[in-house]
Length: 98
Image (cartoon, rainbow, N blue to C red; front, side, top):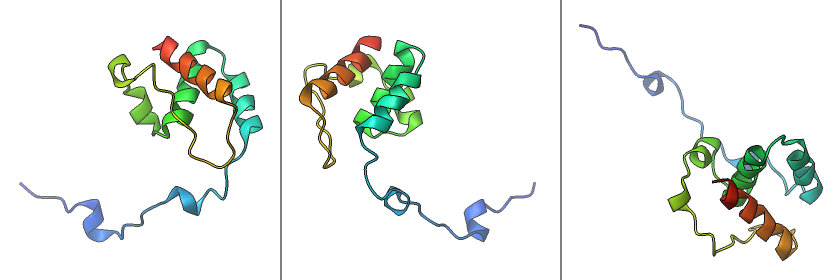
């Protein structure tokens, strides 16, 4: 039986950081345009969850109802704040689809 050497034993590791690729928040209009392209409530909820949680696709897909608190609305972490009602409606869309 022969053992195979792992990939990282022979290749250099380079960590990627979102700060190296994103200069600033794109704004609300591009996000709303993306939401308008979603063809179902489920797809809109998925995009909302990605944005609201900042999670990776695999992390958001793994969410279950018990992972959410419907009474606590997440707050945006960037400088371009959205009106409170927009954030709450996005979160309720996501929570209702689950």
